[in-house]
Each structure stands twice: as C-alpha cells, then as structure tokens.
Image 1: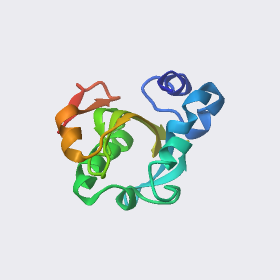
Image 2: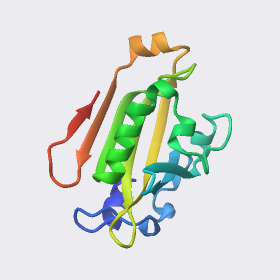
Image 3: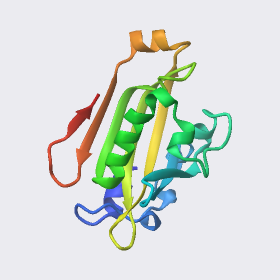
Image 4: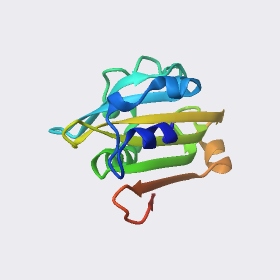
Length: 163
C-alpha cells in the first residue's frame, strides 16, 4: 500500500484519494479503512472499512467518528497520532499492541497515510490494520507485547515516537 501511495503522490505531497487504485493492492482490501477529515471540527469520520476491520467491531464504522469508536481512555493518544497524520502531514506507524483497551487486545501493525484534497489541504487518511494475534485480556497483552507509535513527518523533520 505504501508503494501505491508514494506513486500516487507528487514529491512530498500526499496523493488525493481518487489517485489511489484499489486494484493495485487487492490482497490488502480486507484490512484497509478510509477516513474523511472535517477541517472545521477537526473530526475524522470513517468512510470505508475492509471486512477484517468490520469484524473487529459490533457495528459498521462507516459514518462514525473516531470519538465514537475508540475507548475513552485511549482516545487522546489515538486522536493525537491520527490528527498528526492528516494535519502535519505525516506517516504514522503503530507496531505491537492494538485495540489495547478492548476486552481482547490484539498484536499487529497499523499504518496511516494522509490524503490531500485537490486544493492541497488535508482531506483524510487511508489506513491499514493487520492484527496478527489476539490476547485473552489486557494483562496478557501488556506482558507479551509493547506498543511503538512512530510519526514520520513529510516535511523532513525528524521522526518521533509518541508515548
């Protein structure tokens, strides 16, 4: 997906959503999700979800905001790196514990890539979440898996880790 995203962009500018061609990454579609960015409210709203993403939730994410889908005790942390991806813009990588605040946390990888509108302003993001293992509870997840969140600004600034 990163290769397709890079090829669809121009230099250091992220691509437009319309420039991405799903046929270039068909095997990844079950793990992909798209979000729209609402500039005025700084809200991120799900636009599309792959079937593996959908299976993780009780109801579809489409039309719901980040605030409606993330556990309250994780919201500030998650919102910070999602917004960094869109507003900086930056590439965000999360490796290790995923869905930590859930009854059955997972282990895997998440990548967020920003998307721009035709006018060059932030438009949303495309993400992929691959959960490789599920733990029976939070304590086991904490014992067996750490979490690293790395934000790679596209403006050439140094990457940084979010705690």
